Length: 376
Ligand code: GLY
Image 1 (tube, rainbow, N blue to C red):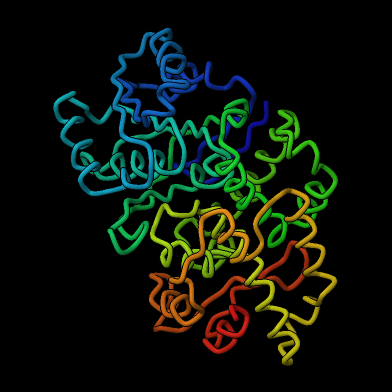
Image 2 (cartoon, protein in one colour):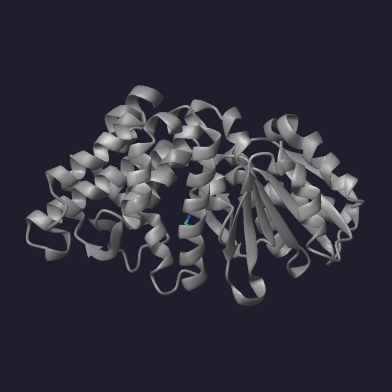
């Protein structure tokens, strides 16, 4: 078992990562103290797989339990579903001592977290992430959100969970697509923030593709500890440090938006976006920006080799092969979408770009022409 602390003064909590952790849900929730009831929020697919097991573990600890199941998929991150959850919490008599437990991937975690942040001006919530993407990224750090039809994650709140429990055996049940999507966030940490992790990924390609439990436990723990340190330093993304978690995301979000949210998994957008971001850094370096002088062909080849060895998409062409060709992804359209991204300050293009292996910078005010050039 690995335990990673997230140090945020009175909002501190622990991330517990182990095979079989689902059976410890009751113990972990009871240990929060003063819990009147647990409201377990899950989606239909995850509930079928693990709902009974987690519910038994909670009831075994003598806690009152209610279960709310939403439909799987990004559509559930909507105001309608949040509204239905608020109403159900009211009917169930949820009070300040109630804890919402999110069992599932990023959609369930973001939705349940948002409802916890807003109901009765804030209830405690607990994350039980079951996808790789949720275990290494979205369950940690307190970003909660729902989508508007035209913009993902635009309505939300920072609300830290009271704890995170990640069972790495659930990763065996993921579809290849969801596993690859989670690996998108994993390689992101390695390329942009931690060269040791990058080396470890290079050395363990077979163990990763065969989903070896011990290797995955180490990888999830490593990613969570990188994220925990960054979140502790910049909880609300004000200093620019937390924004460094977004390598690959400017291009990635524009791809997701162009194709329609949910058409490609988030991690696939990040993967292709991170290669495009590396090409952008290479281009800026070649045109005299000294920060990016180390991003040359050899650097890019090493990144591409890791992605290819892990079977990850690296180009729009790869996405087209897997998800159908998409005329919406013209360079012009993608740049327009990037310019309207909610994180864009005053219409300038912002990117997280690599400067060395495991190191990146927040590059503000990149010219649209440079972004266009790497998309062509
Ligand atoms: N996924 C990026 C963050 O949590 O800040």
